[in-house]
Amino acid sequence: MEFLGFSLRNNLFVAPMAGVTDRPFRQLCKKLGAGLAVSEMVTSNSLLYGSAKTRRRANHDGEVDPISVQIAGADPAMMAQAARYNADHGAQIIDINMGCPAKKVCNVMAGSALMQNEPLVAKILDAVVGAVPGLPVTLKFRTGWNRENRNAPTIARIAEESGIRAIAIHGRTRADQYQGAAEYDTIALVKSRVGIPVIANGDITSPQKARHVLDYTGADGVMIGRAAQGRPWLFREIEHFLATGEEMAPPRATEIHRILRDHLADLYGFYGEEMGVRIARKHISWYTKGLVGAAHFRHAMNQLQTVGEQLAAADEFFLGHAAANDSLRYVTEGTEMKAA
Image (cartoon, rainbow, N blue to C red; front, side):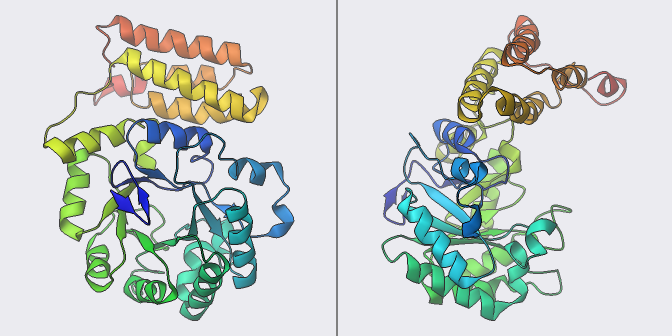
């Protein structure tokens, strides 16, 4: 797929998720079938550029091109400065966050809160596009501020007029947070009114759902976030289904064990042992969600403090599943669920 001057493997995008889409996760998703992965958002506050967290978020060493970095903020001048800073540090695409519904972001009028101030949106987009004339700028936003104010079509028009090269739309309003089901009518409406690529996001949890959303909205691609947590091979499953119409066999327990092992090694190397062990816990929890014995395993895992202990526990858990014909055993409805 040709996208903004880059040749992508496909039209499957990893959604930027705070605390999740770090370099190890982005690289893993690309390896397992994603065409492009957007970084977790980086602050536009120049006072924080030197912080360890910001430096890690801006670390793209060894990452497969293109490098897409998401910036967040509400001040046009600071957003422009952030765009230039990240362009100077390896970003090849600048993505603007107007989709995050988190209170700590929206309370400072950033993220999806910006959608209620359309004149400010125009100023920010103009400033960022003007700050990095050699780089494509993209925008991620929601269907609106709330269900009574689904102004995504207006935001999309402003974006296109400002020189934004592509947009991604989450099928919920800011007020919805992540509750209820995503709707795709607004995304389809936006696609019918703009000439730039539109990426559909929200509740895309299976190959079949990806096919449905692409067909229903006419979108140029789909963006997947929470469904890939602990299931990064979802991208190759969707890629295979879109290409052939056939479902790919699910990964065996031994392969998931290997994927997890590689992911953990990258996390430890990226963050160091102490922080790496802490961050690994949530990923391990996602990899084991719904599996027999997972609740007890996760409780024990959260008490472990060293890389060696964490790896040994993960090995024991997955080798136990591999011993059962190399297939993962999921809990069923009823009393078994409590034992999981």
